[in-house]
Image (cartoon, rainbow, N blue to C red; front, side):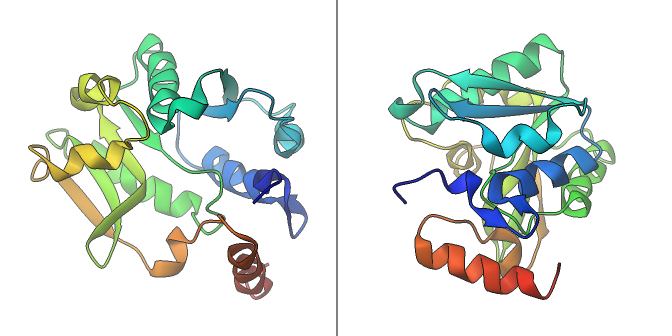
Length: 188
């Protein structure tokens, strides 16, 4: 977009703040925000004094999203996490209730390798990955996202939860941003 999309205003918060607010309202034990080197992190200011989260600047994020995933995963593994959820900061319609559905489904069935959000069967973030997939996540390279793991041998070892299309809308263009603002007018 040519500017920091996470700083764009969305009601009384910024785009990134909205997603982080929902993550912090969820049943996560801890939230790790992975940001780009050089990001001013203005969108994190509303949560500066709130506990339950931390951030990590990813120096090599321009290599691809796999670097960000590996950075967050390293922190989660050091904390001995049983699972991680990959959530995008530019998805303002993701809710804490939706996140909690992933967690509840995982806790109710410890045999699953993942619990994925879907729309019409298509897997999209947020996605919960059990620690049985941590090694696979560490092996991702370049701009290959974690979703790619779920198309292979792990495909049948998870659970999929269906959500409406609006839940997955993210901001990549100015037009997307306009759509987000129109969609949020009725829900704020």
